[in-house]
Amino acid sequence: MTHRLLALALGLALFAGGCGDDSNDSSSSSPTPSSTAPTEPAPSDVCDAKDKLDADVMGMKEDNTAQQYKASLTAISQDLKDLVTVADDAYSDDLATFQAALNTFADQVKSIGSSDQGALKTLEDLGQAAGDLGDAGQTLAEQIPCPSSS
Image 1 (cartoon, rainbow, N blue to C red):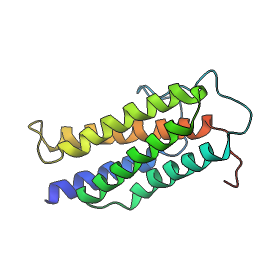
Image 2: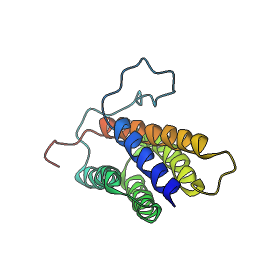
Image 3: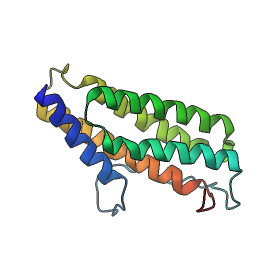
Image 4: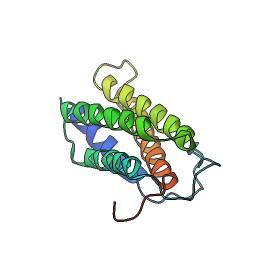
């Protein structure tokens, strides 16, 4: 149980780090912004769905247990489905990138305590997946132009 909590804490710290500004010095592959990102403000239903997704992703910083992470992943998955439902094709690449990062992170959370690869490798993989999810979330948020008050 201690190893699981340590893994979650480290993953969370790395996830939170992935939500901030990144330099391009890193050798990891970061999501690239969609070349067709609209400049007009997004419709309010798209902004509302994006804001809900942003809030739940940021809320994961408060998670301390595998159960809380699983609940957050469920909420974020639903938020993403809601956003996909109201968003137009202009955001499809960024939504697909975020979905892929979310799937990888979910797989890593599920593997905590059940992997044969060892605790250090599990933590490393979880941290990488968390950072990628944070990067994809940041890119997605930047590509959907919503008023700052939404």
